[in-house]
Length: 256
Image (cartoon, rainbow, N blue to C red; front, side, top):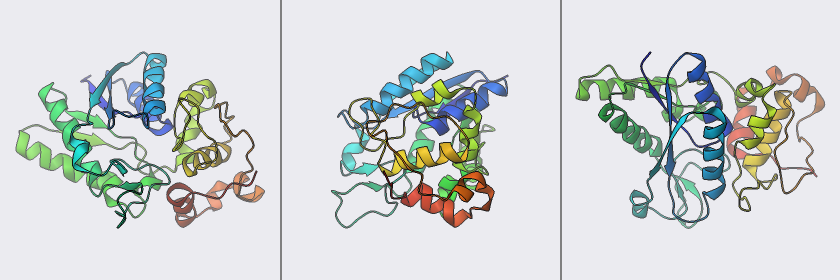
């Protein structure tokens, strides 16, 4: 079977996407974007290296810091929980770049085609794609079709979790709790330790409980009370897409 490239951050979704690709029999290369030479991405890069070793997969880190000089230092290229999508008037505040996903997918596609690889795997979830058309399988397919046309290849971008909520993705870690603990989500880590109370950490912990997954992650703030009701935790199917949008994209206030 032909090799695939997985867009890999060291987070739980991209790690699950890598395992999905392996389960399908693909030879896998993990490609991580290093967006900054500062310390803000240290925890994520550390996890990406550790998880890639754990999985025994080829891992390439792409220094993408130079193109990022075109934007504010607070710009984020790919969706990260708790980062507003729209560009703030004050660009000194964290914000998600419009069409940042396109910049990443274009770069990965160019790298893949150059190395005679025709498939890219992207771990975006249903929650990421809610109200964000560029994080859906439909967008990925349309983009891949355009790439195929201009490159004279049959290029594919597969988004295996496009119809799965984050907690459903995390359910894949049952029996692999130690691997989950090595993945990274935090917005405000101290070195490689995750804070436990930022919006990204809260979403991670809420989703783990919804997935009935034991969370062995080392958090600086260990106390956590799920803000969802016991009934919602035990019956996540009762939650609406709007509820998940609030969990994933807005974050929930923690009670500790």
